[in-house]
Image (cartoon, rainbow, N blue to C red; front, side):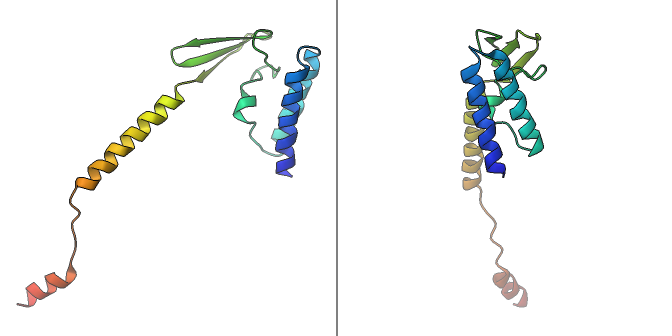
Amino acid sequence: MMRIARERIDILFQLADKEFSRHPERSHRYVELARRISKKYNLRIPRKWRRRFCKECYKFLKPGYNCRIRLSKGKIHYKCLECGRIMRFPYMREKKLKRRNKIEYHTLKKRAYEKIPINNDHTDRESRSQ
């Protein structure tokens, strides 16, 4: 059932994208239906579609028509021209992942050079008995 719901959500957003130029109200309705399905089955809307509708008025956003996109300080600003809401999303994710991997690499490398104490219980017992 969940797989079918995901497929329906994807199909509805694709239809909304196609229909926007001819029937914008129909595309807004498709977004509304997709949101209802995601709520009913407790599914997350995929990231590629999550950024394509306004979080306040729930209208489908088409850049250049009812949405303005700007880049500034590591963020993408989506401004809905229907209600005026500004949504900000980071676009520095690739650099953060690269930094995180570099830090993990250095910590693992450092740990490789540390001496690991070996606990030999057999040698301790023999030395105590003598």
